[in-house]
Image 1 (tube, helix red, strand yellow):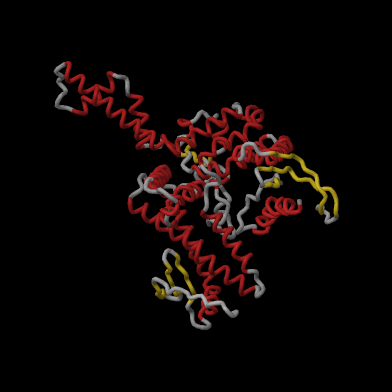
Image 2 (spheres, rainbow, N blue to C red):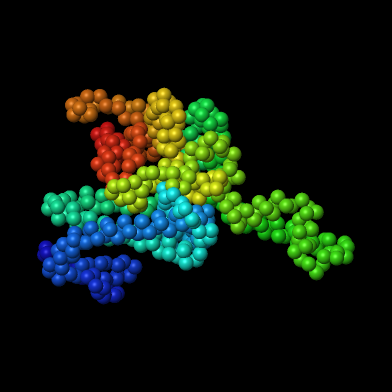
Length: 480
């Protein structure tokens, strides 16, 4: 301490207590956690975690098998309908992200993971006709336990194993591996929902001609129909309840008017009065439509919500048990760490109808799903797709910045002296500069596809994608 300086005093915590191996101190709204383990306890815990890894893997395999067996027995429409309504009910009480809990995450998994299991597991020879409350609670408990095991127990044991195998293991790289796998299993939603319609326009309008050629609808029509699904899965419940309230008001008014104008012999029979009012006003279709959306599956029926052509809908849908990869032999069979069927096809076909229960699987993956589909049907379009994607990746940053910062100056395809990819000094190019007030934005985009493989099954490909699509343009921008 230098002369003249006073030693800073630290205010005592508002609260100090110990919970197991942790010492917890609270300073106002801030909470500080500090390990409180005696010497050698952590090392013993790590040794035990390495020893427990095979047991944890067997436990997860058993849970996956139990979930698959139960799903194969139960009617998938009832499962997915129950899952969606439970998710919607939980979302009704959410006002901010801080309100979300682990249970809300499980509710999402009961939609997307269960739909993936339905797509990958053939139905039982003698399935049940109904899903009981006990069946649902059993399934939900197993899905909850599965994701807890994969996200916590397995990751703790795996990191301990990696550390035991490599004394020089980079802890930051290991943490990145853990976060990558956690993101893969749990995080959904690549953009704000209000951005879905303009995003669809940006990426699909340039491919209007090939969409028309292969499926008989233009880019504008494709975007309009997909947007209907977004609106229905986001606002459909609210809209339906409002329309049902109006329907109740209209029918009650019709019954009152009839009772006022004439003495009806049906006065003592309310159901008959209601049926007569609906029949006289030709509201049968209106009633059927509302009941189908409120109590049936019409809210998720792709062919009732949209006019997407049958040929396209069929290509975007799995039938129960059709996907052969998710539960194929090998590591992580049926685990959330594999590539989920919902990321490859967002719809599910059940009893001849096509359904979309999962908003996030649809919009997070639609661009790549359509790319793979178009390339399979028309391989020679690959070069055109790549050129269009490269052009979009260079144009869209400027388009979005112009919206956010109107009046800015922009300079495209800027050349400068710097270090080239070969490591020698020379002329380099940046996609552009964006100048607003006293701020300079260096724009360098990278076209390409991020690997579709899981970071658990091919972590090297995951890292290579980050180096190519994030690190390279970032490094080029720094050297500009």
